[in-house]
Amino acid sequence: GVVLLISLVSIFFLAREIKSYSKGIADNRAQTDAFEKRTESFTKLNQDMEILAGNGNKVEEAFLPSDNILGYVSIIEALAEKHEIKQTFRFETPIPADTIPAPFPVSTIGYQTSLSVSMDKFVTYLKDFEKLPYFSRVESITLSSQNKEGLLKDGVATFRVVLYAKKSE
Image (cartoon, rainbow, N blue to C red; front, side, top):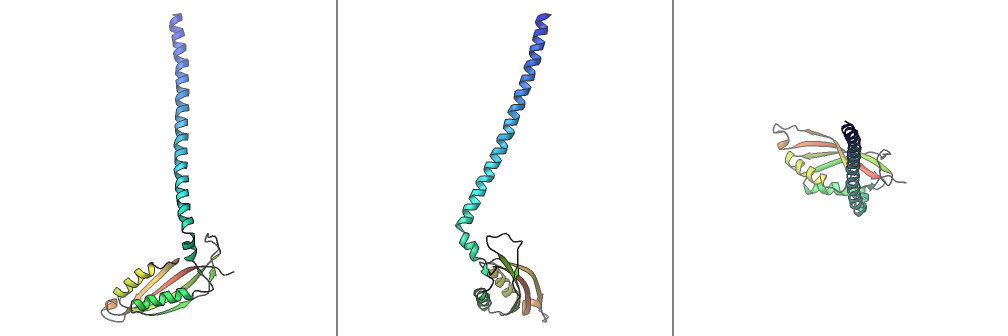
């Protein structure tokens, strides 16, 4: 009876020790998994930072100076000429964009462009517009035509764009 009692007590203590070791192993595994995830995130962040550091000038160049957008105007005029499109535009006064995180102050410049254009030329114009190396956002596009063929022949495309620029000091 004493041997059986000692065996049961020993088994009980051994089971508690095994449970304690198992919990420790599970905790270590969870910490290892968390460490691996943090390491992966850190590695990805480092890769992204290297990409940004290598392209820092390109990123900064994508923000025109808000007090001199003549280069941009020339580019969109050339784009319209390339597609043989009559274009008019009206620019607004720059507005500070303090909520945009950037290493320099940013402002937005809204403008509206009207194009006398057929639908196929408008689509190719937009594809080239999208490739411009500047930060901008098209807010709205309106298409209209007085012809019975609609925009297949001739019409007017009007769109509102917001251009992001370096705020002039």
